[in-house]
Length: 524
Image 1: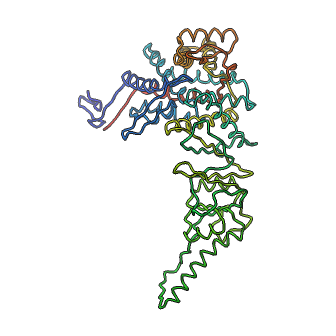
Image 2: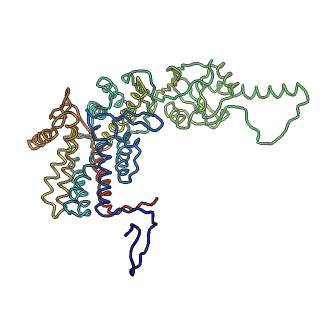
């Protein structure tokens, strides 16, 4: 019987179009689980400090080299709907906490693998889902118990930042510098209400080693002076931010003017010049040293401003103008004639050349925004540095604002698995099997870390469990050409608890959603 055909009273009844494809039962479950596992396996070798990179080449020849899970999955052209759910796991992880995307994806794939074995043993999908959700709750409790500090000092934040960036192509020396920049940036916007993550922006510029990355207490805009004769450096200048064009005013009246002689023409031109010169004089009389606009500045106004030694920038985005206002304390005004001295802010500005590019550095004495000015020797290096910095900024923010830190290097996962096994015996029915399977799935993370560092994964897992049973904290530490089982706290390997919480939650949600599907209907 075809996929869209049922019999009623001996006659075929078609409820779906003839070209509809339908997969049911174990075939549907097997197909979906296999697709999810395949996506998970594609990023597994990137996990940890010794994880490998992936080269992603698009149809038009663009190349991305990275070991960031979210980037890899986002660049892949994935069509299978179940596989797309694993991509959504990485996207959710990236959006909520900024890091741990590979961890979440690998865990989701392993949960699917263990669920497949349970299905083969005739455990009902609903039982697996209920067991997985109960195990997820127990795992969250174990993460809370593993938290070692919530009131973090700068040294601990540096360890969090370095742990996040380790293995992402930043290098040891550059990693130290980048970690310090990240912590300084986060501390600069850490207030009574927590970290204002949106107050940290990132500007990249090719042409130097990544160790040349620095923090700017203000904003960096990709703009050049409106006129070549304007000053390129202003110290503690008065700043005006104008959300309008500085040019001749358009008349609201549709009128025609008849010019009958040269004197009338000259008078009209003089009136234009007077109006344009008036804008520059108004700005100068108000005490403006630097002006930013979101629209055009007439060429003649630019020349007048240059004569007044006023530095001007035109055609800025609304976001850039908002950042400049935040850095300088200036007030947005709707036009030059609406400007008053109380609307002015204060900032120091310098325009720097980088090859053919020019950047304006705007630093305010009481700047509420900071910019991480990232450098890289090549485009691919710079892209990876940018991704690493974004992840590190997010995880340091999460560590400060969302529950503190836990031991890294797989130590927390060993504690989670042990906690699940301890409680599994108290769970009645077949759900116990699902909880034990969840614990086995968690083991994939330290096992993968060990495998990627060149250790025997089984021996490493045995040693990690033995250390935990003995009351010690132990993880997979990368040293030299291989790894070893040691205390991650001695090596400063710390992860935000929020990253672990989100990885367990998002992986569980994706795996249980896929397991519950027993019918796939697709139409062309």
